[in-house]
Length: 115
Image (tube, rainbow, N blue to C red; front, side, top):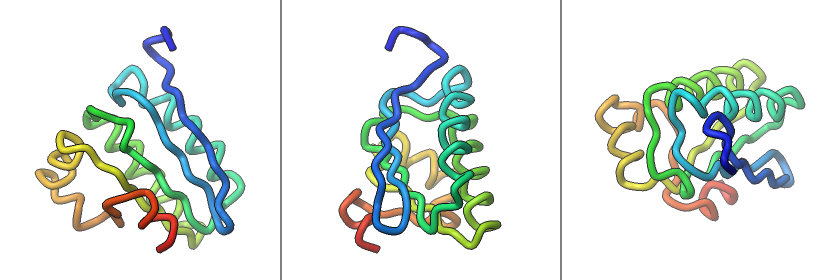
């Protein structure tokens, strides 16, 4: 994908929700595209939205803000947002901002899907 403002996102359907797996860095230029994908998926009000970040080596504050917005949307519709597969750099952002206490974070995608 050569467009610096787009991001590849694999979408899989679960028994009770949706699994999104973005690929690549999530920064100020790419977070709007991710937000658009998440918004489109949340229109169907899935009971559970799992976001697999194992393919995301870097995320800035705009990416974090996108996930916070998605979490709020999920809560408003009595759904759940689970993030999983955080690489070390991304995990440290969540830990420094103490967002690891706010988000439901699973170590692996398998764990998140079976929760």
